[in-house]
Amino acid sequence: MRKKEWRTTTHNWRIMKKNEIWLADLDPQRGKEQSGARPVVVISGNAMNDHFDLVIICPLSSRVKNFVGGVLLNPSKSNGLQVESEVLTFHVRSISKNRLIKKLGSVSTFEMESIVTNLNNVLKY
Image 1 (spheres, helix red, strand yellow):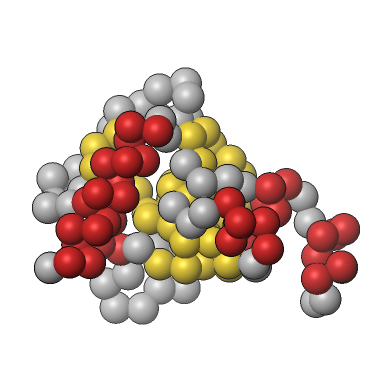
Image 2 (cartoon, one colour):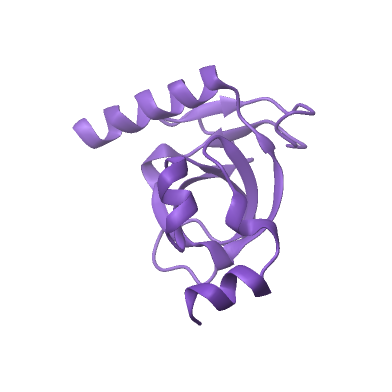
């Protein structure tokens, strides 16, 4: 599909922003990748989000295991989560915008800074 076509035939997925939490379909998965419909937090910058058909995300899990590099999010009106969830920074990946189903909410600036710090630590070691 050409760029002009997808901009006119899709819903609001093209306007997602950094810090937002979206429900995404991560199937099919390979190996130990996160799978299924689950919340993800958009970590790619808004310039990328506005101009590419991909976004960089970190998936969330409601099975909190306190992984090194994981960031805990408590449910709130602003993030749209129903249960405590862990941002799995070590599962960072690029996905097609077509995988995004609906916006749930967003993380705070402080939470995003924590996610980026922990992501940097994962990439460093």
